[in-house]
Image (tube, rainbow, N blue to C red):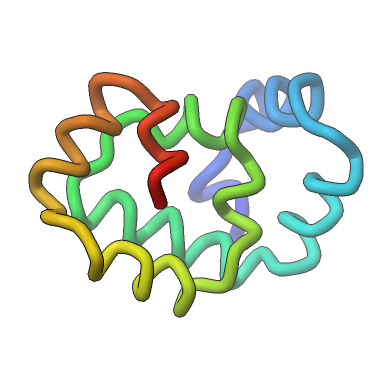
Length: 92
């Protein structure tokens, strides 16, 4: 199931750039992480690979918590900001 979302090359970069604890959380909650990846794709976030490499911890939050946090923002504007600078994800 993970291969549909993450190539071997991307996985290597994720492992290289993230702490073992975060990788462990991501892998042990993979269904939740995939739901967040799908959500981000659905709302228009384009740089998901960069987020996985540099901000993997975002995908370890509960899906429901991400939804609750996103509800506080104008999604279109937020997505545009995230697509221009992945560090904007910090506001979530």
